[in-house]
Image (cartoon, rainbow, N blue to C red; front, side, top):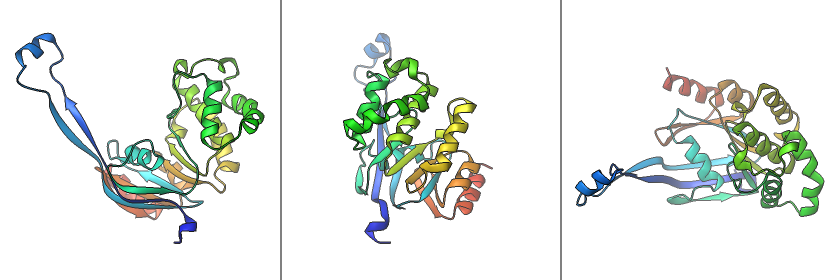
Length: 245
């Protein structure tokens, strides 16, 4: 593959979290453990790996809970800095995971303008899209409410509506069809199938094998922080199901 056909190139990336095990959670414990500092441990969320995602493809990311797939998608989307290696991104990106990236202290209106601006849209374009975004998200009565007061379903609808209408070249979708009410999920799937996926590069995390098999041209499997397979979607699903047997 040439660089012109690559959307994401990750080389030798890894991520380790340093967690403090603070058992001194009372005054008594702290007094009697003055010379016994809290212990810490390292969690190797993503071991060193390489991954290329091609422009225009929808690639599925599979793995059991705790396998590292959500950490990997956040690394690729730039939410977390990688400890090692480097990631080259060719295009604008958007991570959709229950409103990750939105400011809790801003209103829905303000988040629409901030998120759309990050995606490269000019104010005049956002003005023209604003009503469409609000109406699709079904939050007209809450447009000037801070999103910290939104339910998870409202956050998901707003994030999805911004993604659909403002758009980005590369979409990172983390369990987007698992939230919201049935009616909105049906609307989301309909727009996803009819126009949104066309020409976009999509990295899709889902526990639904039906969703992965339907949309993904390739799939990758994570296991205990390691990328153990990248290739045929059906083969990746079979490996995943074996892990869960």
